[in-house]
Amino acid sequence: MSRITSPEDVKKIKRSGQILASVIEKLRTLIAPGIKTRFLDEVAENLIRERGAQPAFKGYRGYPASICVSINDQVVHGIPGERVIEKGDLVSIDIGVVYEGFYTDAAFSVVVGNSNPRALRLVEIARKALFAGISNALPGKRIGDISWSIQKTVEKAGFSVVRDFVGHGVGTALHEEPQIPNFGKRKEGPVIEEGMVLAIEPMVNEKDYKVRVLEDGWTVVTLDGGLSAHFEHTIMVTKDGPEVLTVIKRGDEAR
Image (cartoon, rainbow, N blue to C red; front, side, top):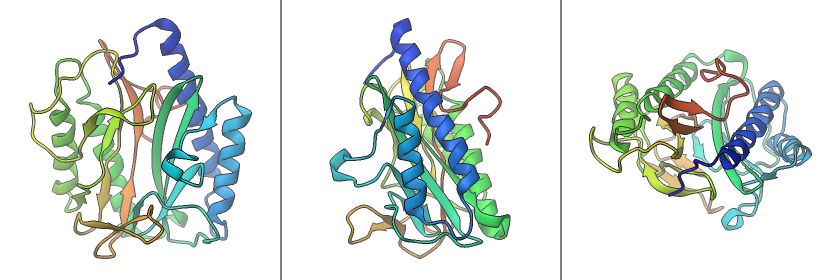
């Protein structure tokens, strides 16, 4: 578990988050009917490298791309390729960046054309759950407080949280302790400390929470074929509260 406290290291991880946020802003403008997921991956990799960083996912445990693009019933780890995005698709993109040894990680979901009310509702709740979790990332609280608030938000809306994949610490490695489940009990788990950097990432299913992995060894889909949405930010725990690193400026957090 990393605790990032030196001013120089704080500066580097904030730069990593800024780079990631800028790539996300560009990708948002490109997601449209007729676009191949491979194109989004190529754009993301080029933008990351132009900014002096590297895509954190590419090559990680053999993953073949710079981003994950998961559509409709795909939960996470969808591999970009020849699939063409269609109107009404629920598209989730997950991206990681490493800049001078410091990692940040973020994800977002959109409904193409805003034409699918059920998918829009799922996306709204997943985003709301992320910020419920972030609001509990305070020194002295416990990881279970984050998990509990995410689960409560999601289940109150009639959806479910994925159990098999979780949020995590991040900083000098892509995945660090502690794990951050999207379900749990208040006042349980590791104590949250100032300087911790956490990737909080609710994965929210339309129906049941159970998932399976496709034969490609990566793509995770819902077991019942229902939709799934995914949001994630990298945050730093400070004495003044959680600071979201993967936005360009304060006020963009809720996008």
